[in-house]
Image (cartoon, rainbow, N blue to C red; front, side, top):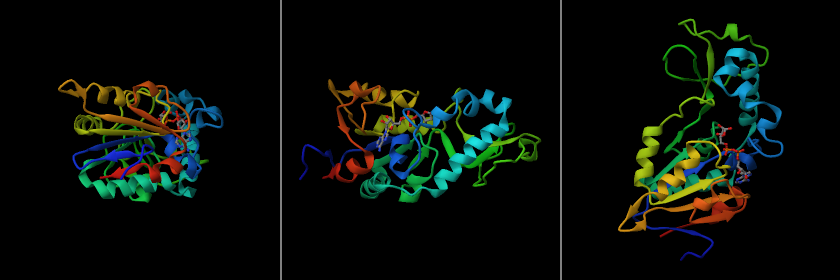
Length: 247
Ligand code: APR
């Protein structure tokens, strides 16, 4: 049985979940916008853009080292656990796309996920096409000159910066085309292309009726709130554990 405060998931439903910084907020990781956000202390252009990397790579490494340190100390919260539990129940009828670069979804048990903005604990080369590699090192005083690739390029965080192309878009679009339920959690809905996913889902019709039921969970209405079938207002860690009625 389900109640009106729940999302009914039937046996033919395919669930597409998109998460943002809000899903990690109750784990103590700062979101980007709003009071105390990451962008309050730093300018995006200086630490999350190719231009900022070119101008001051040490500053960029200090910013991401601070984020690595915070993420290493953080623990998954009940929101991460609830999503991992839903994946366990639905199997291949579940897909998670996160804008987050922390590894809290994985540490809570999520497996079928992509990080469209990259991963904090990976680094790559800014010049050659070598595979990104696991890297949990914290660089506070290291000179970027010391972080060289064999090709002569510089080692950088494997993060998608503003102006760069998000990762895994082919897979994301494929999953957007097959989902019947979209759940968006903890994102302000201002950064593209993620902010458009709900609009793309709303464009899918069969026989004159919408195919996808779309839901948002967060304490504030996101910029694209009007696009959702329903908004569940509240903290992800408090709402998600009781949200799903898998029939
Ligand atoms: N539970 C759910 N949502 C929450 C919680 C919580 N406990 N606390 C805050 N939120 C919501 C806020 O209301 C806000 O809407 O999380 C959202 C965080 O928004 P942003 O800080 O803009 O983060 P996000 O939307 O993930 O940013 C998207 O922008 O800066 C880039 O690449 C970066 O991936 C990031 C992208």
